[in-house]
Image (tube, rainbow, N blue to C red; front, top):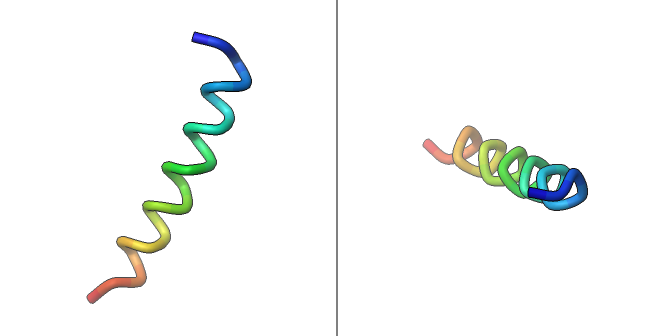
Length: 24
């Protein structure tokens, strides 16, 4: 796994987490 790939995946995961957290 490339560091860049991990960074991008982490960012997407963080966004997904925020969306899920905002959902009731």
